[in-house]
Image (cartoon, rainbow, N blue to C red; front, side):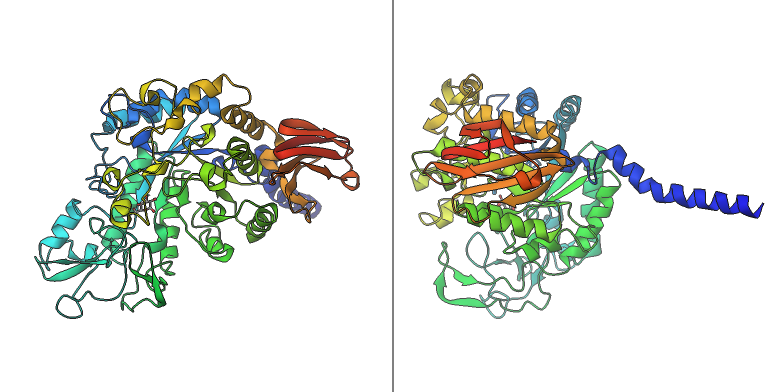
Length: 561
Ligand code: GLC
């Protein structure tokens, strides 16, 4: 009897210890949250597809392009703010978090978009503007109405230092003081961005509750997660210390250059992220962060000490790297060493497109393919930006009168604004690139004649075709899906090369980041491989250990024994 009991006990313990192993095997690997396998795609709704021909894109327009996105290999779309808004900052000034701006459609259109996307296994992510609302939001209208208003403390109100003097020296990211005087109550309110974007007071529990409820509301509508806008600046020093100023330096708006010691990345942000995450976890939702960090240690903090904050803090440092094999190699090493799941981005609606950032004027299309091969074959989740897959370029307005972006209007000519990277999607060669039949809200760049979806779909050498090949491979090749990352030929100044390895399968990626041909010897016999068979390649070939790469050539190959 005693022995039987002992045997039973051993069995129970053995099973218990087996559970994690079984769970891992069922998942195929030691990871596989849905967002780790997914490829994300940022849609700027104003500029994607205009279904009602008013010159501005809309939700039905996006729905009409879902087949295109599916065919491309996209698993989740992040739509930048489509909520009611005075559009001072093109939607990043939200006046109602629980509705759709009529210019983009209705809630019914949104539900339809989610349903249509679901049919194609595409998830929908919304953009949650957490730092601030519009000054037309009912919360702010109440807050500014009197010092005793119910929502007075939902925003940051302070007395000035003296007549005409703001409470401290903080400058707005959009130019000028970060404080706006309001004569109704003779106090200033704080705005990190435009004065029409007052900062919410996240120290107030009622604000937290209202904002958490917004996320619940959208999760119930089928939203699979949020990109959290401007999380870095959620909190400010309650004592309003002046920020240190860099002597004698002025920024593009003519303001003093400040170190944002007291209004950026305050530790309190992590409490909020943990709480937002626990709400998200109830719906298997993902939180993506707009995390402008200056080093890997800062980025690491956003995952949370116990991986309980953002699942996907964006590596925006990646967008600032020089086009150089050693520079990327070192950055990737540091990111992998940090231990979080990497989230690589090469373009978005706020920065010059990677096509222009890296293009040398002569090999731009080929360089666009190098960048695609790089971030679509790395370990981590990529977030694409609409139009990147066809080689869209940044085309800033030529004249100040044409600028739409508020920062371009105040910062011209030093800061031309972000219109250039928000131009309409180039669908085909017809008028307005097939985006609209009306006058588009931003002009279509002349490059739509050479870079558009219709033409590139027919061209096996196009950037679009290359993206499709890579994305297909990424979704089907176990080493690219699940594999570890190992840098190879680490001393090579021109060719960035690495292995992705899963079980006994390895893929070699070799990217020539120089404008000269390179012949590289990959002696991988110590790893048990004798040669590499191309899976996706352009301007490259392999023979035994040797991979030959033309200027900016790309080789992605399966290693064979
Ligand atoms: C984020 C958005 C940017 C916007 C700003 C203010 O940085 O990406 O477009 O202007 O927040 O909301």
